Length: 117
Length: 114
View 1 (cartoon, each protein chain N blue to C red):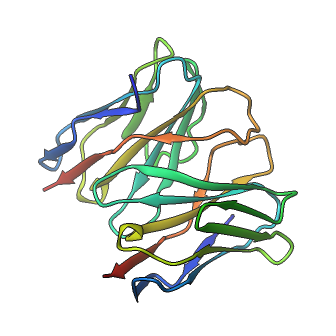
View 2 (cartoon, helix red, strand yellow):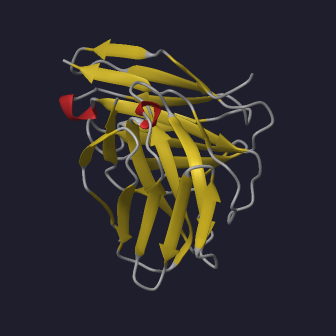
C-alpha cells in the first residue's frame, strides 16, 4: 500500500475486554514499531520487530500486552483484560531497512484510538 | 534514562511571524534527532533529521539546529502560515544500536492565526 495502515481507527472497549489492533506496514519494510501516545503526550516506544523477530519489547507496560508479526508483514498488538489506563492512541511505524542503527525515515500510520470505559 | 523536554508546550502567533521551538534532552549520547509534525487525528510526519555529527538541517522555511554537547535542539519556522498549525514533536535515537526506537518529547502545539 501507499502508507502504513492501521485498523480499527477507533475502538471502544469495556474494562476487562480483550482487544486486537492491526498494522499493515508499507510493503517491503523490514522494521516495524509500536508506540503508545497518551492524550497530550509524546509517543512512547512499546516494541520493535525486524521481519518476524521481536527484537525489543522493553516498552510493553505489562504482560497484558502482546505483539506479533508472524509472517514479517502485518502486525497485531493485543491487549488482554483492558484497563482505563490503557486508553491512548496506538501508533504503528515502519522503515525500509533492518539495520539496527540507521538514519532512515520512519513512516507512521494514523493510529488506533482506544478508549476503555 | 533519556528524557526529552519541549518548551513551550503551546504557542499562538499571528501569521507571518518567525518562531523558535525548543527541545532539550538529558543524555547527549544520541545517534540522531528528528523533528516531526502531527496533525489532529493523524500520524506523525518526519520534517527534519539531524545526525549527531551535524549542526543543522534545512527544508524550505524550516531550519533545525543541534547542539549535542549541551543537549539542545531548536526548530526555526520562518514566515509562519496558518497551515503550519499542528503539534511539533522532537525525538532522539539512542546511540546503542537501537535505531528508530525513539524517545519523544511532549510536543509543542502551535496555532498560527490568520
